[in-house]
Image (tube, rainbow, N blue to C red; front, side, top):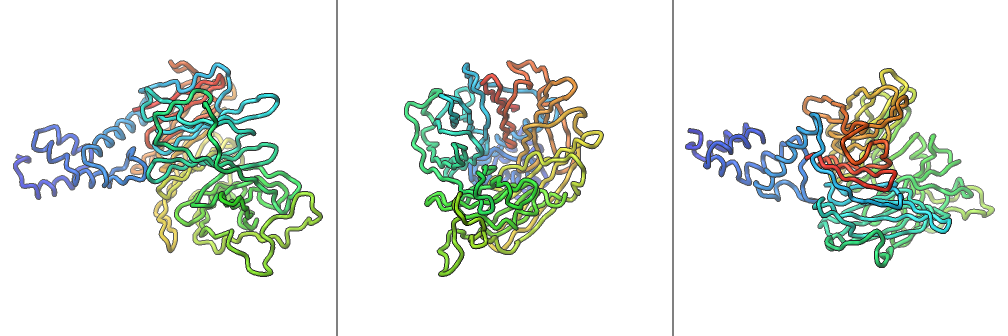
Length: 499
C-alpha cells in the first residue's frame, strides 16, 4: 500500500524516518528499494546523521551519490554497534615486522585512517637518527610504505597536512640535532603504488630546514619544540623555553616563516596564564587551549602577520644572539596577538589535586575539539571528557556547543597514550595497573544524544592476538573509522579494525 502512494507523499513520509528506518524499508519491495536509494533522500538523511561518515578528504555528503552514502552509513552503524558493545577485532594486520627491534616512537594518522606516518629513532655511530615513513593503508591487505627518509637528530613533534585535492601531504617535523630544527617535506600521494623497503633507494630531499632561535629572555638556553601547527605560509610552534617568566611549563609561541626561515616570538603575556598550552588553527583564527587558573580554557585571537615590514625606528625583529652582551629583551619586537576575539571555559572547574590534561584532539577540517583529563588523586579514580564545537566566520568565532562528562576509570592504575577524536565520541588509552604491572587498552564511547559515556576494555591484558598490551609503546587512533595502530617494543606495528 505504501509503495502505491505518489512520490510527493512518499517524500513527506520519508522526512520522518532515520537511516535505520530507510534501510529497513528498502528491504520490503522493489519500488521502495529504488525510491529509498535516491540521492535526495540520502543527502537529507546524512545531514542529520549522528555518526561520523568516512568521507573522502574535503568532500561534503551532498557531493556523493545515495548508494555510496548508504554504504558509508551502514559501515558507521556497524562500527558503532561493535564499539559500544563487547568490541571484537574484525581485522588484524602486521604493518611492520622489524627484527632489528627499533621500535616506532610516534605515529599519526591522516584523517580517515588511510595514511599513517611513523617515526623510529635509531642510534648509529654514536649519533641519533630518526627514520620517518608514510604508509598507504587504503587496502590493509596490501598496505605498504610509499615514502621514507632518515634525518639526523631525535624526533620532537610533527604535523601532517593533506592538500584539498588529496594529491599531496606536507610533513612538518621538529627534531633535535644539537639544536632544535624544523624540517618541511612535501610528499606526493598520487604515487600510492610505489613501494619502499625498510630504507628508500635514495633519500627524498627535504624541502626546508629551519632553525629555532633561543627565546629573548633565555638566550643561553636551548628551546625545546613541543608542538607544531600550520596556517597557510605560517608555522606556529609551541616551545618549552625555560626561565622566560611564563606558566608552570614556560611554554611560549613562535611564528616561523617556512619560506624565508624568519622567526618571531609572541609576547609572553599571551601564554603566561596557561600552565600548559596547545595551539589549534581554524580559518584565520588562533585557538590557545589549556589550563588557566584550574579551568579548561579556550582563547581565540585573529592570526597576525608577524613578518610585515617594520616601520622606521621600530624595535628589532630578531632576538639577541646567544652569548651577546645584550641580556635584555626590552627592544625585541614581540608579536602582539591583538585583542581577544572570544574566550570559552569548560563547565566544570578543575580544582582537583593530581589532575592532568591527557590529550587535546588534533585539528580537523571542522572547527571543534575534545579533551580528556584524568584525576588520580580522587577515589574512585575518574576522568572527564570535554567537547567544544565552534562556528568560525570571517567576522568572529562563536561556540555552538559545549558538553562535559565525568566517568570512572580503574583504581590503582594510570592512563597513558590517551587519544580522543575531535568529535569526542570515541577515545582510547593504555591503562597500567600498578599492582599487577599489567596493561589493558581501554575504550571510551560517548553518545551525544543521550549524553552518556561508556568505558570498557578494548583489548584485555591477555588478548588472543600475536601481542599483549604490555608490549605497546605507541599508538595512533582514528575516531571516524575506529582504526587503531599499535607500536610494540619489539619493533612490530599492528593495524586493528573493528568494522
